[in-house]
Length: 330
Figure: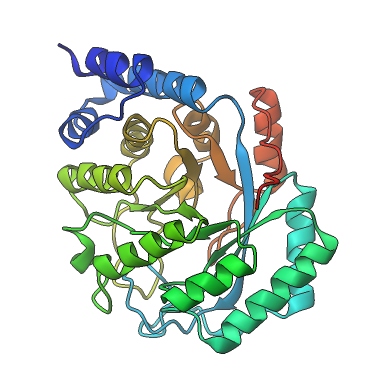
């Protein structure tokens, strides 16, 4: 049976995730079948997730100076990249949350470029969350690196709604991306986060030199993890990093990957994140939202510029895709 007919029966009709070998078959399809693949992914998203789109803004509490060597990241203190260490004060954090809420976003993510949070950072996160809650009605997520059990418990007690920690890529390719910690260390943080009752946000970056087989492996890893949200980033090569000279992923490959990941994760929030502008151009947001995506980050990313939030929000209006209501069960 043709792979798309099989996927339609398995994923669209029965809601059963596409397994690794079938995801690979989707990734290997030619451009002549791209529109058909995206249409199926959109049907899956609409049936199993609905038309709502979750909108999120992010801000970096602590930028640059990270001791890890993630080869894609200009925030590493080990590379000759232009990002230098800086801290955001609490009033600025609250203002960022206010501006995010004004766009209609329901999620605000506090991010720090660290291996894991120390006592100072956790204290600032706690103060920031308290200050935001006093002035803004918005769900708060955090992305603070790898955690200990005690740190997980502290964040849960603060009322953190969702924790982001990306696996970045497949287990087999991870040593080509990071050497200062392991894939398993990241997985362990995610396990503790879930057991503490926080939602799990976990995705990665496509276009870092991985093979299609490893891309399918990554989709299977995420299926096994079962995160509530998967942010899909596309490599935006940053000067001074080990991946600074890699080519940008072709748009057709990026869109095919979006569709394939939707078929592997039929009920998951699948979020457009960094790199979509450079990879997909001005039409990327629309094509992705009609090809399996049901969440977006609006505004800028951590070290790169995004589209103006108004453009994405206007697009959702044109496509008649409602913004997801605020989650009140924190």
